[in-house]
Image (cartoon, rainbow, N blue to C red; front, side, top):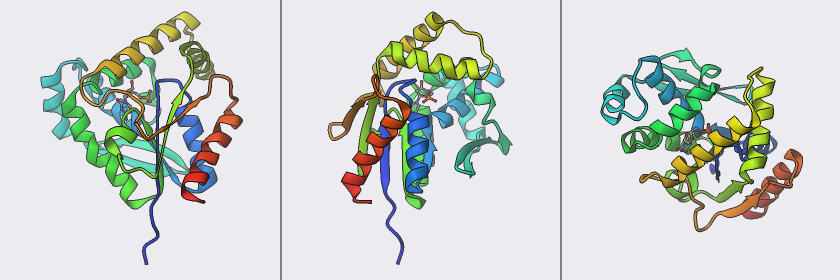
Length: 226
Ligand code: DC
């Protein structure tokens, strides 16, 4: 008999700590962690590296059939392959963050990526993070969590991550970027960032990483009895 696949949807704004927390929780449960932001980033990378403006809907739509996107996992870490090349590192650059938020506002891109995301949840138990996982991609997810934190706390966390990559941005620049992305992600017409009606809100502004992961694991265990 096939083992049942569980799905956990974690949505929230940029810098809420979704990816680090979701990855840790997935490790603890032996689930696959699916970072859907990385998929949008890969489309943005493909767009920008061909000199296409990420807000140019027609040009991006024309490019999509040429893109083969694959997810693979190496020691629990998700890698993104674009037409066979590993672009996992390249897609983390700040200009790609901005481009990803722009291509993500295009309905044609969201439709194009739907099956890639749903397929991942068909074959594995997953913790999938993004912006519209609980509302659109996996509306029947077993557990839905909406992770939040104040823009200032999120900017501080993002700055630390960027500094660890030797990137020299100021707190104000990172905060500004977070606020712009929040606005764009939650005001777009298609699948805007919003909390699903049946999602549990978890504000991590005053929680450490460990406390946040514990809170996520408690919610999941309570809901699906693992
Ligand atoms: O989580 P992230 O910062 O890597 O995501 C990059 C961008 O992709 C973000 O600005 C919003 C978009 N995104 C989305 O619209 N829907 C998702 N499910 C995941 C990401």
